[in-house]
Image (tube, rainbow, N blue to C red):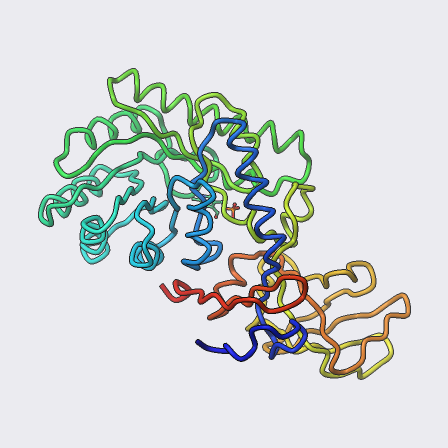
Length: 363
Ligand SMILES: Cc1ncc(COP(=O)(O)O)c(C=O)c1O
């Protein structure tokens, strides 16, 4: 295994930049989500796009997840062939090659996919029939995000009826992800908009049921809305992903999850009294939403600039890190940072305890 000789060493001895997972915080996050949803009697099908790591998928399944969501067929293939047998591909799968892959994968695991187009449903049906597979299907409703998904409940019902008739497909229910609500900072406003999105989805599910369709899944929500959706009557499962790691964006919402993921970097230069240059840049941490913060020094360090392999960190309050010192950076978005690394260094009490391959990072 790459880096096996690093196991058992203090985290500060890792070559940097390194993607580091605090195991205890990560497991606490899984327990917090699991306990909350068990009490709410709502299922969790966590989104694996966050971690792309089969070891984490297995931990989530062992903790009670009913399956995993995946954002790409490649992710789904990696998870299935690592032994995880229940996957929702939570996006439309279109085009002959992709549909063939999906149908063939469905001969090895229970695969569910979302659809928002009649021609696509027919293509999925033809491939499932050709390869002797069953594809489970959720019809996708846009609940305000403005990405994929049907824009009207009438069309949702028409598509549901078509799916229910087509050979090789098994209609299972409704899907609607309220991505536009996840990061609304004000809790009351987030709740209001989350409930509006959930209400639309449940209205769609009821219309499908009224048309005689067997709706047993109504799926939505992410880390910013898991509790809002879980409290909404009619939502049966939650697709949250980032809660396991957290990041700078979700940290601002005051959620009950701990920051478990950091990028360890080394101070490589102190050109002035108030500037530290560190060895992590755009190739090692995602600045997708805003620049990273530095754990434990949120008020004394401001990352002002990232270049390819460097971060310019402005110091204040007398902070004086020396070249060679290590700092833990918190990305603004965990998912787009994890995808930059081959391995996750898993630590407990500051000691590297395991190295988990991020096997689906290129998938
Ligand atoms: C379809 C879908 N479901 C759920 C999520 C929620 O993910 P997270 O909890 O990481 O915000 C996402 C995020 O992009 C998504 O695209």
